[in-house]
Image 1 (spheres, one colour):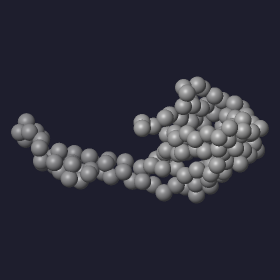
Image 2: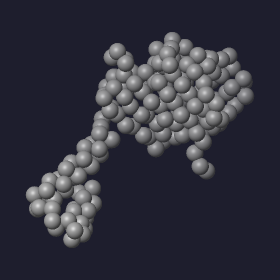
Image 3: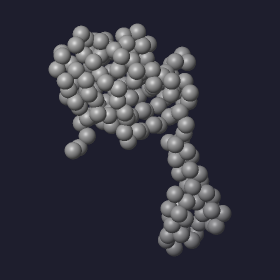
Image 4: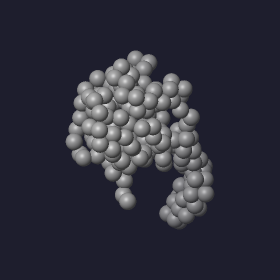
Length: 166
């Protein structure tokens, strides 16, 4: 990052020679700070209350826990599923609590965790296994859950699911 910024500053062409040295130094310093801040925000540790909510949401999906799903999904929740169909909160809850549906515990690979004030993206790839209507299934999916902290409570407001390339 710093090397990239130095290279940018070192490679400015001679047309910038009209720019005084202090402006050039200020430009390079600001550019470096912007990249450091973006990287620091991306690598931030999850707030404790968000981490607990994410763990509870995963458990609620595995356990088909209607009450927890109701609590952790926002009223305006939207899912764009791997088939391209759009579902709302009640449809998702119906799927996870349907008779004959059971999801096994899963591990998130290639995790994506981005946090900002009152918002976060949590995602990755998961291989889901279980039964649906009594029939076994396996599906490997890439997902992104968008979380919002509203009135002091973390809830999922949007999920996008797709099939990763083979």
